[in-house]
Length: 139
Figure (tube, rainbow, N blue to C red):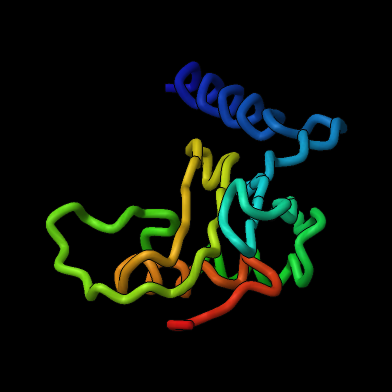
């Protein structure tokens, strides 16, 4: 019994010493690391405006990056495409296009945005805070 108690105390002492390293933990990788290109008149018809966005910590060239991080991380199904079987209104919202590439919560992102129908306009508007100076709603 005494041997069991001694072994238990030794194990507890060893466990208490684990993780007490004086080294600082490595910084966490950004939860968001994106490159954003916006073409006001459509890709190939205008020069793309380029931005970057990093979160955790917030940074990059996108205006209001901290707020953009908060909004992006709060989105449900960020960057999800419009499902193929969705009926969309036939309304043209303008030639504006955008491309977002990089990583979001550890996953690779390559998402194209346009305003060619009601579904695409809605998707654009959901992510609009990533596209500075770009329109919202139907034009």
